[in-house]
Length: 332
Image (cartoon, rainbow, N blue to C red; front, top):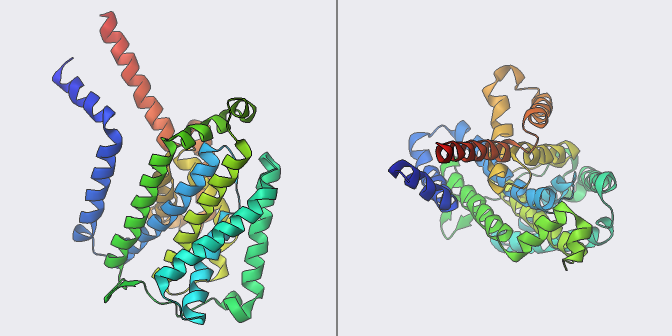
C-alpha cells in the first residue's frame, strides 16, 4: 500500500471524526471572514433547518416512514416559546425545554393512532395535521396574533450575554445544529439505529428479527418532533417575530424535499439538503421569487439522476470508483 493509499484509507476510517472537526473549525472561523449580516442570516436559517431535517431524516430515511406535517411541530415550538415568554413572562431557556416536552407529548398522542397507517395514508394524515395546526395559528388570534403574527419575542441570553446579532446567533444556532448532527450520528450507529434500518428495509422481516416496529416508529416520530420544536423555539427567539406563514403545508413539503435531495438515510445529507435548498434561490437571482419552482425542479432532477440523494449518490459513486480502481490494481 502506497503512502497516498494509506492516507486515503486513514481518512476513510476516521471520516466522521474528521468531518465533524473540519465542519466545527469552519463554522468557528466563518464569521471572521464573512461579516455581512445578510449572508450570516442565511447561514443561520440553514442551521435551524438542519436541526429539523436531521430529525425528519431519522423518520423518513431511517425508519422508512413519511411525514408531510413536520412544520406543525416547528410552529408549535415557535409559538409555544413565544407565548410562554411574552404572554406568561417565563424565562426563555426553561420555556424552550418545557415546550419541547409538550410537543413530545403531542407527537406521542398523534403518533399512536396515526402510525398505524403507512405510505400515502400516513402522508395524508400528517399533512392534515399540519393544516389543523396552521388553521389554529391563523384563527386563534387572541393568543397567536393570527395572520398579523406574534411580535416582541425576546432574544435568548446567558447571564448578561445576549444573542442579539447575527454573529452571536451564528455560534448559538450552529452549536445546536452540530449537537443535533452528533446525536443523530450516534443514534444511527447504535442498536436503535440498526433496528430502524431493518424497519426501513422490510417491516415484516424486522418484526421477525425481534424489532418492536410500532414502538420504534413512535419513538423516532416523537424524537423528530422534539428536534423540530427546539428549532422552532430558536427561530422565534432569533427573529423576535413569527407568523403562521412560516409553518404551513408548503414549509412541510420543503422540509421533506430537503431530506430527499440531501439523501434519505444520510445524516450529512440533511446538512447538504438544507443548505442547497436555502441558498439556491439566492444564488440564482432570477428565481428568487420562485422558491417553490426551484425546489420542485431540484427534486425532479435529483430523483432522475441521483435517486438516493446528493450525499448518498455521490458517496456511492466515489466508493464504486475506489473499488474498481482497487480491482484494476489487483489484476495488474
